[in-house]
Length: 504
Image 1 (cartoon, rainbow, N blue to C red):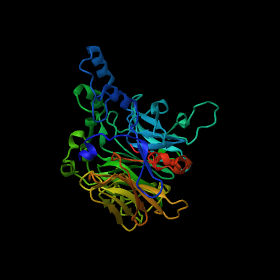
Image 2: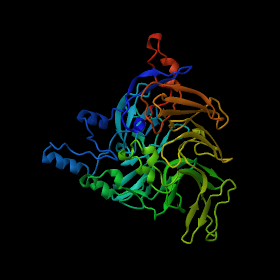
Image 3: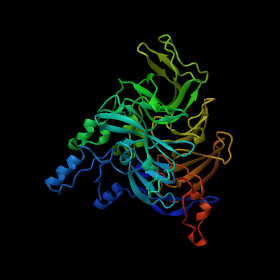
Image 4: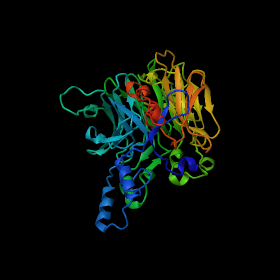
């Protein structure tokens, strides 16, 4: 485990040619965030992160210490954007779950300006899993905490291009608009969430009983605990399902809920015969979160870290138009394609029971051309009782069967689907996954699979330190054309990335 979590990896500033037939190159670079720069300069952690609270130098005077305590009451969160890459117009941004994102150069991996969402929309935190429509507009959701006496979930839209207004530097972000807002059920304990779902006409958002205690967060610094410790799962509560009509920009009137659960990743959603169907990876509790404290990431991690619930692919269905005359207890879902149910209750609430599709998968990806539409395939990492992925899998929602790739001592990253140009079939393309090995004799490599058969087409090994990453983004187009950056004979060890955006 020391190979994976025990130490920082070395940067690979100059592109290294991979050992493969063809042109594949690898490059990595730490994001030069304000957080990174401050920590490096001080040679210790001086900017508080979600799981690690930073404290003033004991040599500082009492006034400096007092200021540090006060500044953490209403914290300015980190810009350590380590979760995902977002495409916004012509730009790429490294993202995290705070109000900050960092623009990057996807070719050189240079860190560019810091962007504060709060300049454009009143949110304190936002997801790292935005959605994109066919024209490239970005849809995302964030939480506005106790703003004007209210805490709410804000859905906002960033246009793909900025309107021509003659003003230099007015990019798409400056034209961000609030799409819709949903009042939090609790003023001081809003829900934590990592993603959401969209269809052609609707947005689906889960207000789950995994909640942030704002008062505890405000006093965490004084109490000597991390912000992460201020999240708690309330197993006695419900998970509320919010459905927003994109045409009216208002929530539908029906009230939907399901059993308590923790969801990090929505897979997909679509509309079918008057119903909204959505698929998520769900846990019965928040045990996954607890396993990634640094104290647990030791050499016995793989053996001793066990989830108390296995991530499960669940399908929910909610009726978009509820028959007011339907009998109490009746199932409002009549779809032949799923066994998911929505039961009408006495108080006009609707209790949703999911269909359990598959256990043991996480980091789901799809062919994004099918996002918001009926689809068949889920590409994911296999995760059982341990949070560490061991295989890459393809799950067929129609036949309920799966294909997988795995190799001893290999830990795969989230699989990325890349469609074949002009593809007609949903699974016509390739799967890319960065593989890290715990075997010191096996180099890390980029795995290339045929998405139809899941047979290995190629692997590109690189003799570098490679991180086990979270999420990534594939961006086709001339800006990523490796041929334009092919090195000369004298530069065989140096070139640009292989086409996959930098993964953090």
